[in-house]
Length: 166
Image (cartoon, rainbow, N blue to C red; front, side, top):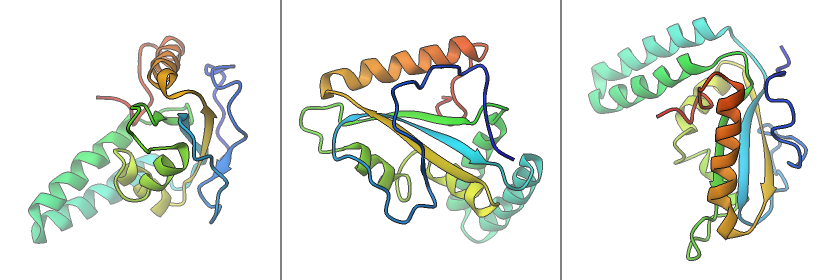
């Protein structure tokens, strides 16, 4: 099922065209900016993803308790997914000494980003994600990210994107 959200409206106007996570070599800039991770197409129904993931976390808990607990905590984040395809809004390269760029953040989504585990779980169950970005100066990344999250919250009854929730 293709994902659209009428509430988001023009929130992400000025962002790049969508780049699929399925693209093996995406062209992403080595520049600071802000980005949004969205569901392009849903796979297995979310309630089934939650059930199967919970079983996997419980099984992992038996042989590796700490990892099982961590997986369980990340799986809980999937419950926050609603009708809006936006899963995460983030920034790259905020600090002057940081080498993080939009490209770096995309790569981190595979191995150490706060959204990595829930995104991986969704991908395992046939969900397709995409990333869109907007470059900006290092001094404006935090401001842009905050503004985007605030606008999102205004349009979604005070809620942050599913994987931005604290």
